[in-house]
Length: 183
Image (tube, rainbow, N blue to C red; front, side, top):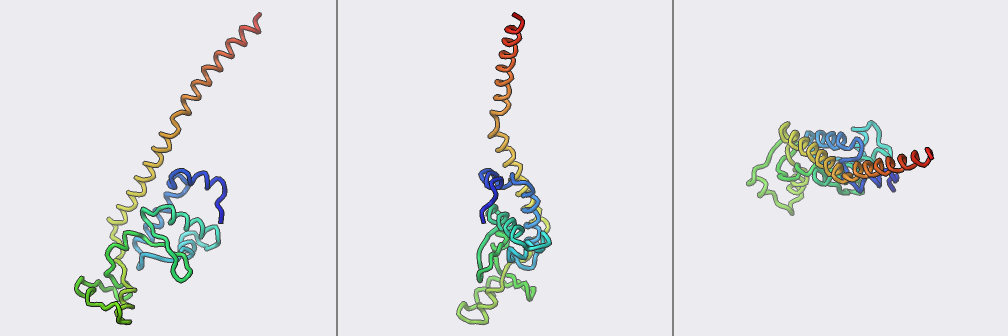
């Protein structure tokens, strides 16, 4: 699906400059940070966060996750596009179904070739993030947006200069025309 020209133009800049993007990133961080599992199908996010899972909504969320690899991982599993919060992939020793955290020793005893142990390994994830950890990610996103805004302002330094030059030449032309018309 090709993005409209206005979004393509915005994508050349920081994705944080897209209208409403910071709110979407913050919502996704909060949902994935506190969820039982650190990942879900993008269509599920579209439904849960926008209230519907039409093509536009799914593409919007796919763009949010894809454009912000500093927070999210996008992948396909069984032909279903999924997104995950990267921080929650750091130390996968928690079984969310059993609410049990495996020690390093217990984890090392799980045999990769044993079907039961493989099923346990596949279920393991990380615990949901604490409020402080989520706040750290939120603050990081806000800081990245502030940086993007500052960079954007720095890239348009020439606008006030061009306006001043045009005003100067306009004044000269206006004075010249006034003098011509008085003759």
